[in-house]
Length: 175
Length: 136
Picture 1 (cartoon, rainbow over the protein chains, first blue to last red):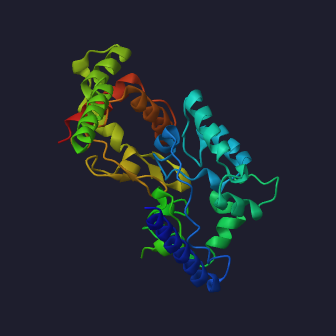
Picture 2 (picture 1 turned 90 degrees about the vertical axis):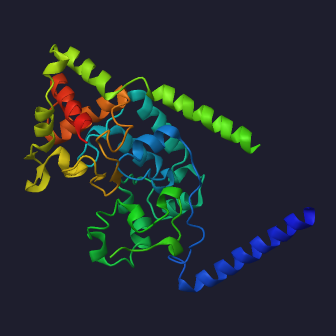
């Protein structure tokens, strides 16, 4: 049993290392596929409320200060009323803060923070330097295709976005 | 083991059914008619349909209506502004609709504000459900 487990461990390690090795030559900024899977988080109100209109954006995409701004302005949420009752709003904000980019709980969060000034608190994930850099190979026209809708629609190209999977291999840009 | 899983699954389904059986389109219509101080029978599916289709001034010099996101046919899935699927509004296509009073109130509050730039009256809400619940 122990040997079996150890064998699986060795295989997994070899697999990971070879994946890393093959993805490195494509450049560090884009080639970190494999690590772009977000921590699996479950929070009922976050998933139910935030995912009504868009995917439940991962807390690790923005710092705490951003989430405070977003959750403090839900009455005018990018032109739409997304207001919540105060208890649900506070509950979701707590969850977002605990898992935010600057909470130190995720790899993606650390990458986002590496490219953000300490006083920055963008309202849009798409405004962060990390996001812009990550998407600099996407042709401009692709963003406005009807099949995509807007840059807020992660799942248009990241087909497994709702499962927190954002690695390069799972990307298909629709026509 | 499988049997036990199956049984607990059934039990969970039963609990969900009980939890959401509290409200129905009919009970919500009765509630809104009462709040509006009108008889239930005076709610109008025709007025509800007109409310659904009425175009109002929106953003970027475009008009907006309920149908903008929910589509002209409420049995079809809609699309939010950022492209996410919205499950159909008509109970005929989506039996979960109008079975949770708090959820219904939340969306009337948000969407009447966004589309009509005002709150909807209790009678309008009753008309709206009257129409959608008879869409077949």
